[in-house]
Amino acid sequence: MTGYLDRPAPSGLADVIETVLDKGIVVDAYARVSLMGIELATVDARIVVASVDTYLRFAEATNRLDLYQRGGKRLTEVADELGGPIVEGIASNVVERKANAVIDKTVGKVEDAARKAVDLVTPDRE
Image (cartoon, rainbow, N blue to C red; front, side, top):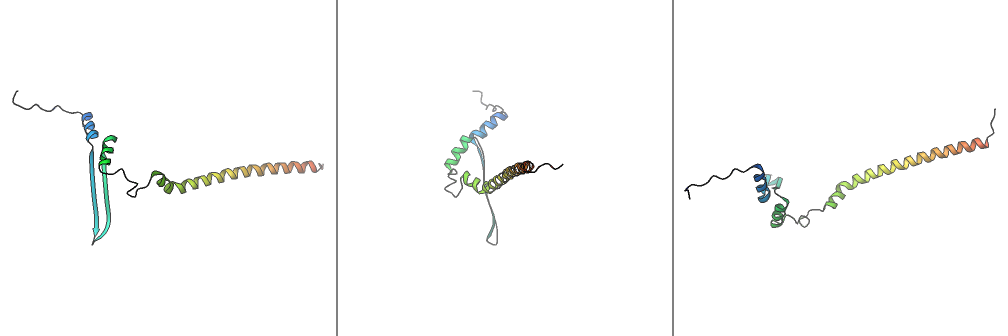
């Protein structure tokens, strides 16, 4: 033994990233703004920087994976609420344009057939 402590080896960016992803960083913030006892705004934020495995272990330990039981909505429900009217509007416009195109073509063909029929029935007058 030499009697002194060795300096720690310098770590590179890869080592720092590996440690952050392995251990994770959690920023948990809660703020409430009230005026004369009336709550104006509340912010409850949790920011997690970690690997997926580390986050899932953290979320399971803090019961953050049970969003549906805590009043959260499934992705399909959110998509139906937000995207439903938009998709219906787009589909309606597409169907209307296609139907109008078919009607225009059909009317054009009927008019051509009517002209040909009139030409066949009516003798040429020259």
